Length: 264
Ligand SMILES: NC(=O)C1=CN([C@@H]2O[C@H](COP(=O)(O)OP(=O)(O)OC[C@H]3O[C@@H](n4cnc5c(N)ncnc54)[C@H](OP(=O)(O)O)[C@@H]3O)[C@@H](O)[C@H]2O)C=CC1
Ligand SMILES: Nc1c(N[C@@H]2O[C@H](COP(=O)(O)O)[C@@H](O)[C@H]2O)[nH]c(=O)[nH]c1=O
Image (cartoon, rainbow, N blue to C red; front, top):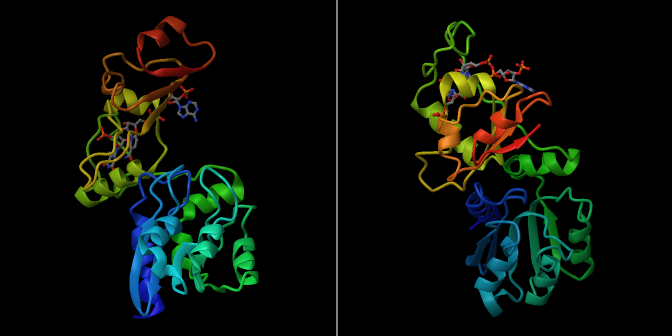
């Protein structure tokens, strides 16, 4: 089997963290010996084992002299988990192929250099598909700002709703499913007060093949018009709601949206 096949498999494994890994990157890894995969891993969530460590553990002592294919440059520092470069060296891996370098200031190629100096053969593919898979993490690391998806459904004449504010689905089934996927991988879903009032939306990720973690639902509501009878407030026990109000908003109104966090 070729290197491409192993890297494709690593990228597939990384996808399994799509709804849970943030703010960490998506990472997948495979350990290969004599042309066959002997260990696989992916990063599920912050604080849990990194993909390389899961794959190396699965390979066990057979990892000595084997190759490691990983979508992102391994880490070299003690964070919530120990450095992956240590685990790679301890396992006796002979060659490491990484999909792209980690822009985290602690890495930026330093891990690959460290491995090379320790006698491991290293290669960075820099194939755009690996960076694209991690575009949200790369954006956060390089700008310090969150990655924002603007999602809007537009009619052929460029409108987003009827003139009276009444809402009708503009998009079809496939686009709505994609919108739910985007909600599932987001840290927060944000709308204005008008949308909350006219549409009475839920803003949850739903009807996906796998369960999505709860998402923070945010309403920009300068005059605190969000109704306590709205579906957002009524479902606050399942998925949290954060309301941003203006400074002159009525505190008593804010408190009546029981359960919704409230910031002015
Ligand atoms: N087709 C689509 O994809 C979508 C369509 N819609 C449709 O849009 C319509 C609602 O639109 P509309 O009411 O115009 O807009 P919004 O939903 O944005 O609501 C406007 C309100 O939100 C406040 N607000 C909005 N942005 C900010 C901000 N950045 N900071 C502080 N306050 C903010 C406004 O404050 P202020 O009063 O100070 O101006 C105003 O009170 C509905 O009919 C809905 O169906 C909504 C979402 C998606
Ligand atoms: N009209 C429209 C959208 N509208 C958005 O979806 C919200 C309703 O979400 P929910 O109550 O969770 O189903 C609504 O308030 C608005 O933000 N989305 C789309 O994908 N296609 C559409 O045609």
